[in-house]
Image (cartoon, rainbow, N blue to C red; front, side, top):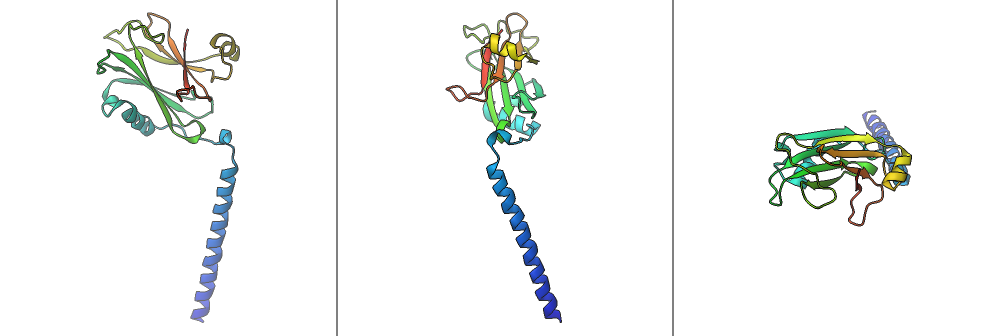
Amino acid sequence: MMALKNVAMIRFARSLLAGFAGVFLCATALADEIPADHVVANPVTASDLYREMRVQAGQNAALNRHQVLVGDFTCDNVNDQIVGWMDRDNPDGPFFDVLMVTRHGGNLHSELKQIPFEQSEQYALCIDDKTAPPVMSWQINETDFMRDVIGDGELCNIAIRIDDFMCDAPQFFWSNTPAGNGEHWMFFRN
């Protein structure tokens, strides 16, 4: 009688495992068939942000006073995070560093922009005010503005603006198609 119970339990366990395996194989097959533009990504977490901050800018970057913006900056309905801080350790002069972190398409991606002060680059800020850093903000633009003024209606219409309140604000927009250097955050100055 005991041997019969053991056989029955073994058969039950096998059928249970076979059922789980079938569900797993089915789910894996379905996941492989989902197009990349339908992948739902998790939002960027604070841990993701600070890990990328260490990787992109060094272990002490997070010790600087910094600003963080949280929102959907890539137009995929998933929160991204943008962090900005004054970088006074660079031998080429002071910079305002902006790190953009997203999980657009399901993969963690970050890009660091170093914005100089009082230099000839088009994206340079005018004045390094030692009492206050530039201010980061975001702005939502109309699709007509994106097409007619920015010149690319395919860009995400949400801009990251960096204002020193002395000259035009550099803005960055997410592009699903990377530039030749592999970067997705496109610069525009208004």
